[in-house]
Amino acid sequence: MDEFALIREFFSQHEAADSVATGVGDDCAVLLPPLGQGLLCSVDTVVAGRHFPAEARPELVASRALRTALSDLAAMGAEPLWFTLALTMPHVDVPWLELFSKGLYAVAESYGVKLVGGDTTKGPLCISVQVMGATPTGKALLRSGANVGDQLFVTGSLGDSVGGLQCLLGKLKTDEQSAHQLKKAYWKPEPRLSLGQQLRDKASACIDVSDGLLADLEHICKASGVCAVVDSARIPLSAALLASVPTRQALEWALTGGDDYQLCFTVSGDEAEKLKQAARNRLIDVSCIGEIIAGEGIIEASSRSPFQFKKAGFNHF
Ligand code: ADP
Ligand code: MG
Image (cartoon, rainbow, N blue to C red; front, side, top):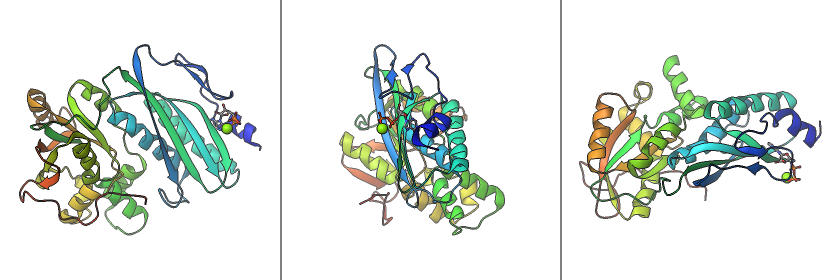
């Protein structure tokens, strides 16, 4: 199977649509962004053996690559519209491609994004997904808007994905149900797209937690010129994680582990109180974990000093 047959067979399922005048097949895709909206784009690359186990099931690899890329759109409050795929692989493995393509389109379908182009090359297995989306002009959620007095929130629970990876690597043994849930957090993180969109008029700053809460929150603090006070006791930890490792370990993973793809955001005044109330009534899946004060960096609420965990976040170099 040559390159063009491969593209036709596995990556040409999305026909022209309202937002796509020309999709896969020409030199460029021709896209029709919603009138008067800002266009947001972001690209993420995953390398076999570095970001995921090389022998992993192809549908999971595809699912995770697209989900994690979409998380960046969620963090900005964007509506997802399109994506492109740059696929590098060592040889044409038709059964692998079938499963990969199926997994990719299933996730694309569930979030309403269209595959509109890409690139296909030979080399060590590597996948780049570029996502594009839109927000009303001026409404994108930035890292730089946090203000003194804002309350600090996160969605979902943190640390599960690291637990899942440890399970996959055979380094963590736990009960079957917990292992299933943790591995699901690793392979199928939920990009918090609708929540991100709901936050457009509420949050002052937002980021997705891809490198660990402390590392990502630090980006908000730097961009906004503020200090974050984080209460360890209020970090959301799942029952599955707490059933699998000691609380101290769960907390360390939640703070430094990464790959959670939850949102971390700041909200001011009345809006923050409303959000806390909705969270108490379990109407929204968020937790208030601290507040923003004047200063820089991140401190722990009880000790009023920096966290003692050695290495925060993932840094390639
Ligand atoms: P060019 O040489 O003009 O860059 P290519 O031969 O790389 O074009 O690709 C042909 C068409 O197929 C283009 O429309 C491109 O966007 C699309 N395409 C290539 N690889 C992929 C892929 N992995 N997934 C989706 N579309 C792809
Ligand atoms: Mg090309």
